[in-house]
Length: 190
Image (cartoon, rainbow, N blue to C red):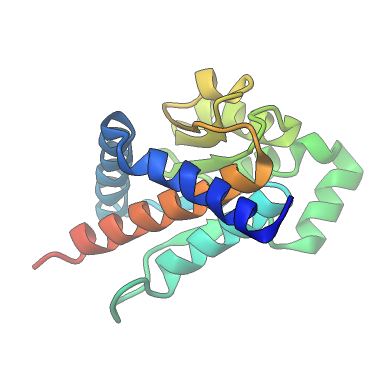
């Protein structure tokens, strides 16, 4: 392996997204749903583990802060950022409940939950998706072709056409940025 090979592999996966019109339609439907939810007074909620946790935090920050232009913040949060919350819930209820418990406490009908998992099989993400079903929270799954159980459980699913964790995470960043840009543009249209 060398640096050029890594860059070529990353470019190959990203290029496959550029030509995937079905994925583009799904991304637009997700973004339109998010804009409607935000306009109705709801929020966007993100969660993931490891690198996907970093992506979840990143996307929430894009919504609350700004993406392309200065504007009012949009309500969004990442469930994986509060270490006291994570360790208390993990200790008292088990690590698989760290996101579901937070959704039960802070999620509301009409919110949108973005579940990020490269495998689609993370127990705490699956529990969170199950919790959303009982709360009336729309679920968006970002995963890979493996999909795990997650792909079938979500209202909207985006499956990156690769099995390599780094390539999937890189694609999730590109997909997340495209969705954030679309939401920002549509939400603040004059």
